[in-house]
Length: 310
Image (cartoon, rainbow, N blue to C red):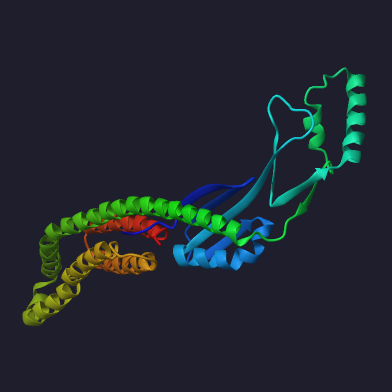
């Protein structure tokens, strides 16, 4: 079964007072193009994280986000709804009392002047600059890293499940389009015999328009040989056989696993395009050319979606 390069996966874990959130988004790309955004404590694990992503996702433009959110309830007076202050990758130190007192005095004065209610004053002050002093942590412990890694693996599992689901949709679409091209190819056959008869009739019709003297000079054996050579150049049996083979090979390749399937399908689609173009150049009949145009339209839709296959 084919896999799509479009995907999304998310996983969360709780570790003491830290919430771990891992999120993956993917689009199509010729190779693995990984963009990371993670908490500062994980910087020394970035190479290992990239190795895991490379081994499991193989190809695509992937955006990875790993956030460690420290959740603390506000101190001081207890509000009706506790305020959770989440700062990714940070550890809180005690409240800056001088800054808190300064903001409290200024805001109380402003409230009295404007006649505003005092509700939510503490929550507002805690959001002011320098009231909650923070400092970046160093690196996480091995026990904490084990939890982060497990969360990353779950997010990747969800991401791959999404890719599999999208791949199944692509496979159904490809099958439908291939059936459409095969059906159009079958429509070409009735025109082949009539096309040869029309070409032969047109040539002899042109010959009849010549003068009697000129017709007497025509070597009919040579004319028949040249006509046979000309009609052989317009024969499309080889192109039809090759196109049918490419369609069957495309179906078989869709059952492959792993990366590289999308590239192979792209090559097969190119070969299908060559055969369809040759059919068009040899058709020499408007009805057949209309069928060829329809084939090209379907093939372009296939080529566009092949770019999303892993």
